[in-house]
Length: 82
Image (cartoon, rainbow, N blue to C red):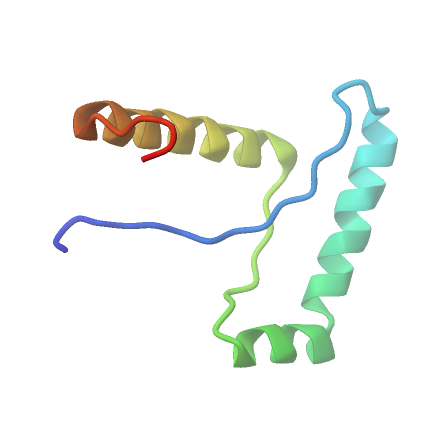
């Protein structure tokens, strides 16, 4: 379908009151893990594009996705249980 995009993605979330230093450390360690050559190679062999983004970028992405799919649901008149 022209103009249609849908993504499968994974993210790691934490409580909003987590200390910034701890959140940064977790982000750094996860980035190291997914970018380790053996891990990255296995993920890419499965067709997974390995990337990462800081929390503020992920938050903005999720908010855009919620707005986009809410519009699709509303315009399509999709109801719970459909």
